[in-house]
Amino acid sequence: MIIDTHAHITDVKFDADREVVVQRAFDVGVKKIFEIACETCYWDKALELSKSDDIFVSFGIHPNNASKTSRENFNRLETLLQDKKCIAVGEIGLDYHYDSSLQNINSQKELFIKQFEIAVKYGKPVIIHCRDAYDDMIGIFKEYKFASKGVIHCFSGSLKQAEIFIEMGFLLGIGGTLTYKKSDNLKQVVFKTPISTLLSETDCPYLAPQKYRGQRNEPSYIIETLREIAGIKKISFSETTQIMAQNALKLFGLY
Ligand SMILES: [Zn+2]
Image 1 (cartoon, rainbow, N blue to C red):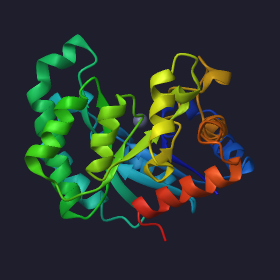
Image 2: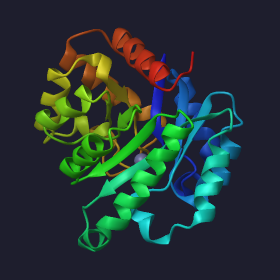
Image 3: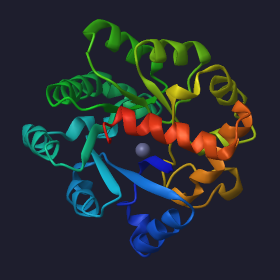
Image 4: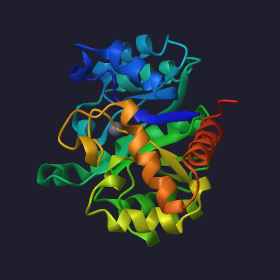
């Protein structure tokens, strides 16, 4: 079984051929897709999409929208979390990548903590977006000691940071960037960490694997990342897919 644990197929880039893209994923063996609706404007569309049997959904507010979030958004989020197809809160987190984002670090932290508290309240795992902010993220987890679980999506930190997150009970989301030529650091992280702590994801339409680099990414391309993981771990492709699917089903309570 193959699961894409992180897709954005409600994105406008799929408006022309969304059904074809989803079918292509199922044709190559993808059994479940987790749609990540992390902007309020995508929530309804994602809810609609999740009416399809094998598509599940996560709701949240991305740190890039930290400055334009209202109390109504949080109320709606709480309602959405009670939907039977909702598996998580996310992606939520911290993003210090752009100079402009450094001006609202406090509102990013506030938004993140607020949503983490909501996740804990409803017993949902969190899907964490963290860009150039791993040490601050670790600091927040240490300070607040949230009794929750989740995944550090599209992990790109150091081995040391990976070990800290794993120690805290988080899994690492591994995407197409693993297949890039200059991904020695991430390859090392995958090599050194137990496969039970890894999840496979695409983050489509972003971050297409090397073979399709520069093009729109889609869930069927997850095969490329899984092949790479199998190669690094020196186990068969089918065993890799089996273990990683189990990791996802377990984290998101889909038994
Ligand atoms: Zn994403």
